[in-house]
Length: 324
Image (tube, rainbow, N blue to C red; front, side, top):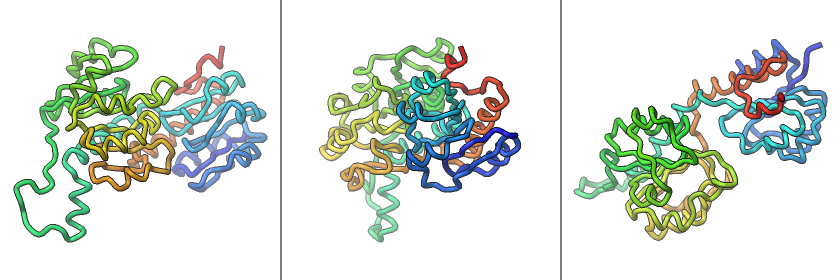
């Protein structure tokens, strides 16, 4: 008899085909997701769960799972899962890194450019029929080339953004809990600096840190006040890394010049002030949303699940201590 797996939300069909070759699959072919009680009920008799970021797997809920051996998460970030609690329950947790690195870096740089050059505002201006003539300062924005980019978090995606910055001849500063390898610093011409210096000297600040207790509200009113009035901040990591009300106020009052945001504190809710501002480029959490990349993410999650089902160590296990 095949083991059983629960897939909590719609994924690319190739991933379901792979899973069905190895397991009985209960597939929730919907974008709505499962309420917590329903997820718990459907997890009964399942050896594994293929989850997405809207599945809030708290310590309390994880403790109620019976027989679940693994959670194969579709995404690189897994702050929706209490990994420490999963480890205590003997549940392996996997994610899907690497395959989305370049796609997310592309989106981060797209938001940076859109905010700097006022692309969203310009599109609305043209479509609404306001364009009557050319003028010398019509929708004049900020140059990106030869400017200073500050990056918080020099992991895979941070490095990919730094590589893109080189094409714009940008100076790149970065801050992280630990320095990047010396070879990476040389290759990407990075300068490691303290947080306050990064904020003060950067024309653009891009966030690429995981959501942890130490990074929650990494950027708040005090940090925004230390930035240049002409600076633009970009967030493609997790919404709570920025204090959203503080950012809305800073943008409204001209403390900083603009923002490019793909993530928000209470998704899918967005602070109402941000929705009204013209100096913000907004996207609905689409950092990895290319067809190729999202398909690869689904397939990698399925491959992690298959490895766990076969008693092998999954290739992207985030809590290896669960095996000790």
